[in-house]
Length: 338
Image (cartoon, rainbow, N blue to C red):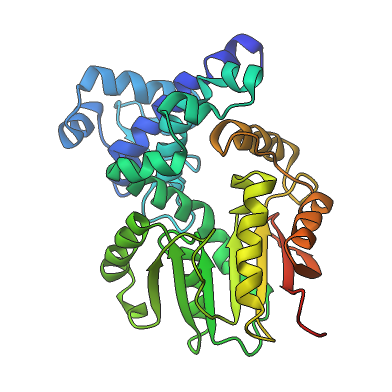
């Protein structure tokens, strides 16, 4: 793939994002449709939509028959909302705010400042709080990324006598939903920002009412608030969003909570540079951390993350490579006797 084609990648990303936002794959789930029919259902211009879909057909996302009707392909199936591994909302996020932040890549290269902050005049979390619709898409995009991990963790990790799980920065609680369904005897607490919790509670009532009474949301600041008691604390893909200093603040706050219960554990689940992901995925993740996250943040390897854990008054008990490519680190409070 030559450099000139790669330079046009942003155009392809925008086309994928537009198709995801319009729900084209959902409309094509059960029937082939012409550009005119799709435009009528999506409120778009037929000739422009046809050009966008033709572009995506050249890359195997959608296909077109001799009658001019479009249909899904294996590459467009994950753009369906109901697909078990849907990536619809992540594609919306990656092709919009994420791509805009990458427009400031030269700022990150020359100053180290987050490209997102340079573009949107604030952190990604500030932006999502101030823009509710963007925040809703972000929450759902994080669900897309968490859904496979939820089923994997439920099948590959034994929670023993745990009765309460607390997911810090857990968004809509998709990780907890999978774990609670696998363990009917367990309760879950999803701890996140107030706006995220408000959306999560609404989504729980609308899409997962079977978990009402077992999963609850708690709004707060995981850097400074006293955390509620739990048997297992979860930090899934959270630490890589923060600098070492911020990560230690967060981990130390969890350490305070762990010290109150002798059997309590922390599970840190991360994408590491020496983990089980492909080289391409790791390379993308490394630059994402620099452009999107807190200025100065870097993706870490296992040794670096282990040292942060030790500096935060935590004891690393063991590590485990999950089949998703993530690395799980089990920790306890440093003051607890073995």
